[in-house]
Image (tube, rainbow, N blue to C red; front, side, top):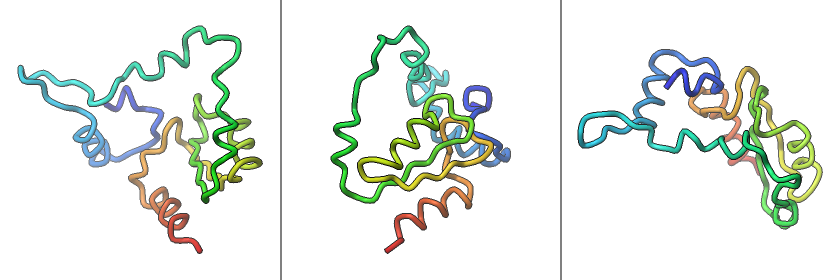
Length: 122
């Protein structure tokens, strides 16, 4: 789990155990498997068509307060995309989490506070 998720940032042994317990499942034969598709990022690293699917027209229709959490070292959600998300549509509040790739695990108190404060804001 640590090797696959190293970009999630620094965690204690207890936090890694917690994450592992929620991501790994035991098969009937006793072997272990990830409870998600670990190849989920393959399409993003493969030869993509020259133009990605354009979703901005849908994003621009969102009318509720929106929060975007970006790991500072994310190789999936770029700073340029996040800047556009803050400037158009619902004008998302953006918080970049230092020392984290894609994606923040939201198990640290400071990360939880970001979401809590956003949800409880007037």
